[in-house]
Length: 609
Image 1 (cartoon, one colour):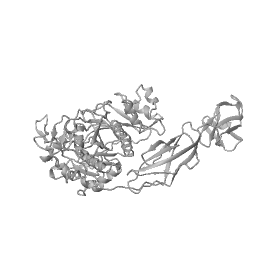
Image 2 (cartoon, helix red, strand yellow):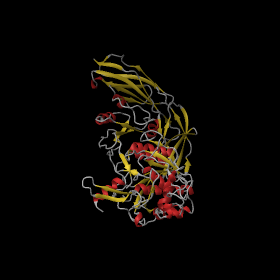
Image 3 (cartoon, rainbow, N blue to C red):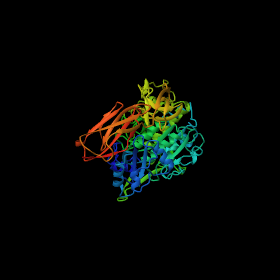
Image 4 (cartoon, rainbow, N blue to C red):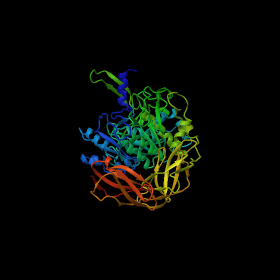
C-alpha cells in the first residue's frame, strides 16, 4: 500500500492525530510550549493541593481575563480534579503563561492539547445479508443466546449522537461541552456511527444490529463538526459521564499528547467504578496514544474484518499497551439515518489529488479503531447486563481474560463476547493494617488521612472514602489514596473512618479513629524587651509568654523575617546580637501550638545605637 493512499485514508477515517500541545511536567514553573491548530489557544492550569477549585487567580485578574472558559457546569467538572481551562487571546500566550507560572495557587501550566476522532442472528437486513461479519468474528451471536443486554448506560464521548433509525428511543439527555449547551446534535457524524455499533436495535426487520439491544446511550459532545476537541472538554465529558452513572465510557478519539487533566479525568471515572474503553489509534505504530494508554483504560486495536477478523489491519496501532483487538471495518448508521456496509454500493469514497487529478483513495469510509472500540463497549455492556454487580474493573477482567490469544500485537488477543459472559471476578475485599496520623493526634486545617499496609489480592485498590462523624466527607481515587480531612473551624473531638474499595467493587471499613481538631491560634506576647523604636546595641534579650490548651511546641524570635532564636521551655527567653543585623531591625515573636497553629506578636522596630 503506497504512502499517498495511507495519508488520505488517515484523513477520511479520522485517525487519532494530535494537532496541538506538548506534554509538560505537572510542576510549578513549567515552561509552556507547543502550537495550536484548528481551535483557539487554551491553557490547562492545575491548582496546588488545598487550593479550592473556585479560587479566583490574581494572575488572571491583573490581565483582565476571565477565570475559566465554559459555563458553570464545565467549571464545576474540571474543579473535581483541581484544574481550570483558560482561553488565551491571540498574542498574549507568553504574558499569560508567565503570570500563571508566578501565581502561588498554580501547580502546572500546559497548552490544552487537541484530539481528533479515531476513524479511518436477527432479521435485520445487515445481518441476514451478511453485511455485519464483525459480530460473528467477536462471537456476539453466541453471546446473544445468553443475553441481548439490559438498560445499561454507555456514554459516547464524541461528536454527539442523533436519534434516527435504530437509535430511536435509545438516546438519553446529555450535554455539549464543545458549545456549552444541552444540545448533543451530531453535526459531524462520527458519534452517531459509534453509538449505532453499541446499541442499534436488532431484530426489528430493518437496518443493522448493535451489540447490546437494550443499552441506553448517554451522548456527551466534546468534538466539533471538524472532529477536533480539547483535552479539557474531553475531561469534562468523562467526569460528567461518570457522575451520570455511565457504566461504560467509550472514547473513540485520541492522540499522542498526554495531559494531567485528561489522565486525572480517566482516573476519576475509574474511581467511580466505570469502565473506560478507548480506540488505540490508526497510525500503524507502537507509539502510545492517549487516553487509550492510560492505566485501567481498555485500549482497543483493529483487526481486518475482510480477512476473517484475526489479522491486524494495516492502520491499527499495536504493542503491549494495546489490550485487545476487535474488527475495524464495520457497518454503521450515519447521522442522517443512512446505513453503511463494506461495499462499493454503500458509503464508498473516492478522493482525487486536486493538483494532479490522480485518484488517491478508493475505499470504504467506515474504517478505524474508532469502530473497534464501541464493539468492545457493547460486549462490556452485555457482561454488565449478565453480571449487574460487576464494576468497571470486573468488566475489564472479563474481557481481557476471555480474549482469544490469536495475535502477538496486543496484550491479550481478540475479544470473544460469549466467553466474556462466563468469567467470574474477585470476591475478596481489600485490606489495610491501619492509618495515619496516629490515634488521638491533634490536627488542624487540611489533613491527609492515609491507610497503611493497603493491599488487594486481585486488581488493586480503586478508591478510599473518608467518613467524618458517620457522614461521607471526601475521597481519593489515585495512589497513595489519602483523602483529605478538612477541619475548617472545628475544635474538639473528630471521629474518622475509611471505606476502601477495590477495582472489583469489594469494600472494607477500617476501624474508626478519633482525632482532636484544634484550629485556634495560641496566645503570645512579649513580656519584657526594649520599647518600640528603641536604639539597641550588644545582645538584645526578648522575654515572652505563650499559652494554648493543646500546649505550646515552640516560640521563635524573628528579626527582619528570619528566625534567629527558638525556645521550647515556658518562661521563654530569646536573644540576638545587634552587630549581626542591619541598622534597622523588625522584631517579633512567633508561637506554635502542638497542633501547628501559629500566632505572631506585633512588630517592634529597633535601630542600631
